[in-house]
Amino acid sequence: MERGTFLYEVWVARWSLLSGFGITVSSAVLTIIIASLLGMIFGIALTYGWRPLRWLIRLYVDMLRGIPVLVLILFAYYGLSLFKINVPPFWAGVIALGAFSTAHIAETIRGGIQSLPHGQTEAAKSIGLQFHQTLAYVIIPLATRRVLPPWMNTCAEIVKNTTLLSIIGVVEFLLSNQQAIARNYMVLQFYLFATGVYLLINFTISQFGAMLERRFAHLRY
Amino acid sequence: MTDKNIPTIEGSMVRRGVLGLSAAATAIGGVAGAGLGLLAPRQAVAQEAGPSRLQTVLDRGYLIVGTGSTNPPWHFEDETGTLVGMDIDMARLLARGLFDDPEKVEFVLQGSDARIPSLITDKVDVICQWMTITPGRAQQCAFTVPYYREGVGLMLMADGKYQTFDQLKEAGSDLTVGAMQNVFIEDWAHKALPETKVDQFESPDATLQALNAGRVDAYLADQSAIRWLMAQNPGRFADSGYGWMPNSYASAVKQGDPTWLNWVNTVYREAMLGVDFDLFAASYKKWFGIDLETPKVGFPTEFS
Image (cartoon, rainbow over all chains, first blue to last red; front, side, top):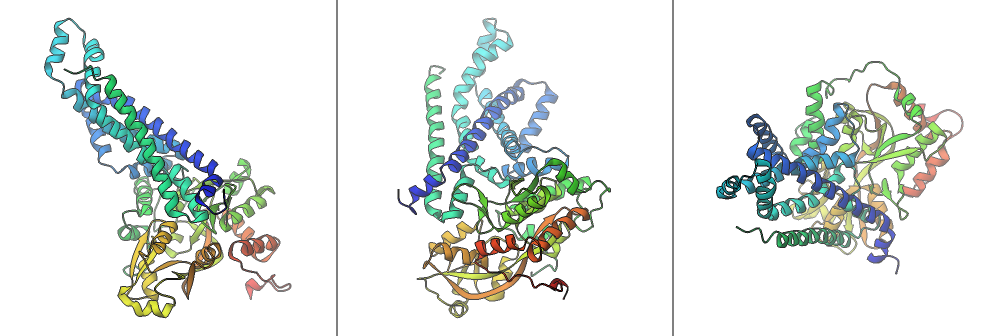
């Protein structure tokens, strides 16, 4: 590899880029796990929960969906410090992204459940299923099938939102590219490279989504 | 400054673009702080007398410094992935003074907009991040003595449409100058070129890309950055030959701790004029190509 070529510069920055890639993927995966679990619980609670609880979660969802994710990230990092809660930047970012995406997924799940024909739950009742069984064997599987596409959308959104973590000094993939650019000024090359890698991550997610959709394909009604 | 004599953070919020993150960061710091009575922008921040941060840092065993990682020659990563630059050298001077070990520093990477919020929220002990001293900022943090006098200039493409500052002036409103976002940037540009259009970008490399792509005719940047860019890319760029807007770079610490501020000041002053001059001069040579004159022996010239 010749000095001064793009490939050479990528090679020079390889550890930094790999580490940035690792931070991007790990923050995205952690956020997806947190947001999916909490979003599922909140979504079910929004549909079947005790009224005051429903009202609280509704308030949470509407608030979080109305705040720009960047503001949430800044608040998690700087705002909490004012209350003497000092969270390392990576975790502040994951908490903020998680809280934000939880609201989106909760709303998706609620929509998915409420779009199910009422006859499904009636049928479950008529064969003597308890509520929790109905939830586990009928509602969640059927709703999952319906919410897969918007849920995958949210996952792709999460990956893109991780770029905002650079604002609070987390050296994720985009910032690791910018650090390389600061040294060699290959602006276009590195941004194209970063774009390609983000596309690749999200392509993987969409393939995973397509696979899940095939797995759940038999759950048509 | 057009509409305000004292640039406050609030004033800057209005005049920032969508990407003006300091507005958001400071708004959060400001709103939350004002709510808690922790941050009174226009009052001296009174603090209960406790142990100085100097003691806190010594007990901790390492210094925590707020800086950036994408702006050569101030703070950037070299080919080995090590953070280097003039700001980094200043931070290492402090660590040397504290622990006899320039390595005992933890760098907290942050955007330029995070400098004051980081101090206010105690995330860092000191900021070494090309920080320009302004009266507005000095109300929110305590500045040390400056370690560099910056000025802005205009960089052009060596083979571009305009070659001299006079040609830029003649172009009038046909001219577009690109610059990194800054509250005062419009005023700065218009001081030199009253009629020019100004396009603001979120980072130096984005601005440079715009110049390369011909989207802007000139790049308004710090002269240190222009010198650095021209040295890195021989023959590619040209300097318009005009410089203006002096501004001083200093470190900043949280207000209300005179002991800590005085200690940092002492180290800086003696680096510029006393025992650590050789180290300081080596940094100047390395990052700016400037040969400093050895301070004269005899009467301390800083008082003359």
